Amino acid sequence: MRERSEAITGLLPRMAQLSALLNRGQLFEHAATAAGVTLERPSMTILVILDTAERPLRVGEIATRMQVVGPHVTRHLNTLEKQGIVKRVPDPDDQRARLIALTPSGQRLVDRYTAVIDSWFTAALAKWPDRDRTEFVRLLGRMVEDLTAQLNTVIDSGTADRTH
Image 1 (tube, rainbow, N blue to C red):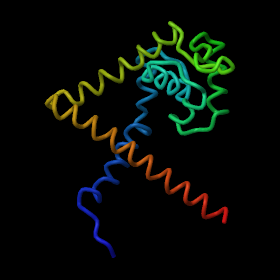
Image 2 (cartoon, rainbow, N blue to C red):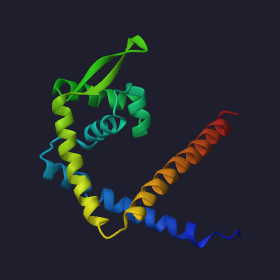
Image 3 (cartoon, rainbow, N blue to C red):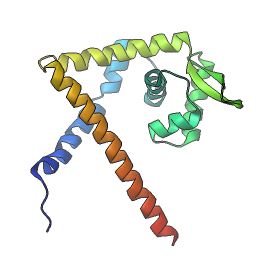
Image 4 (cartoon, rainbow, N blue to C red):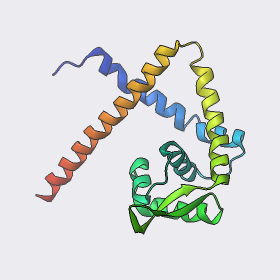
């Protein structure tokens, strides 16, 4: 049996706790209610992705960031567009393609929602020194990127194994 580092052994239970807190703790539902948002979670996720990207995105880029397939995103985008929350704009690099952008009302909606989330996280980390908060965000981002790359490698090699 190979040895595991104590730090890595403790990671999985903490990740499970965090997942439970964010999902079963109904973070989205409570934040949406507090912000007066009546959208479904996937629709709100799209808006947050567009907001954090700070530029219009292709449907495929949104789907990749959500880790879902394009048609799933398209269904939600169609509803959001009908509600005037997002709009399709020309892609300056390819006039045949369209990008998805927030409308002013969509931006106001996502601003209300993220303000609620931000206030909760700010309060939770209020006793942390600025240096620790900055380092935590940096390390968490690094972990998510590296784990995503690793899992994509595992998934891709598993797919390759099944096709041979």
